[in-house]
Amino acid sequence: MGETCGAGSQPVSATAPPPKTTSRCVFLDRDGVINQDSEAYIKSLDEFLPIEGSYEAIATLSRTGWPVIIVTNQSALARGLIDRSTLNQIHERLIEDVRRYGGTITDILFCPHLPEDGCSCRKPGIGMLLEAASRHGIDLSRSVMIGDSARDIECGIRAGCKTLLVLTGNGRKALTELTRIGMTPDAVFDSLREAADWLVRL
Image (tube, rainbow, N blue to C red; front, top):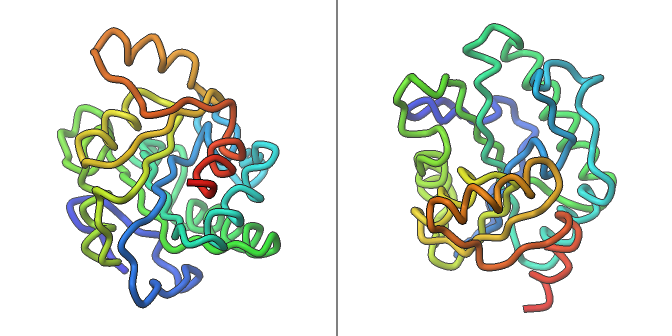
């Protein structure tokens, strides 16, 4: 798997093969949703600390007919703070840890660019979602974007997805920003685990 307009997928074979018939999925932001975020960026395996219940949430989703695809801005690459080998190791560990909980991550896409690079993949741009839809036969109108930032929610809205904001990470700050720009998520939850429990009951 290579890059398309900078939307780089985790380039190892640890991702699961796509389901035979995928018409919907859950897109997850990474930092602040699955793992604890850091203003200094996540630069190593030691700094990748899961948020309580997040791996169980991914397992719940993937076991109940919601393929999970992670879409994450990773400008630390362009800043020279992390190399692709280390990023791949983080994602390999994430995939394996989720598997231990009985879950599957279908794909991981990341944008390596700086905000000022003007790429189409960095959220709130929808390039990563379009790439994922093309790869896996996803109907974006039946899919869900879960994030902790205004750009996650804006990305989901622009792509035609249902949007869920979680209050871990930057979620509370995002509520203020979304109000300022006139956007509203479809629902707000304290954590990914609560969002997943709600989603599988629909």
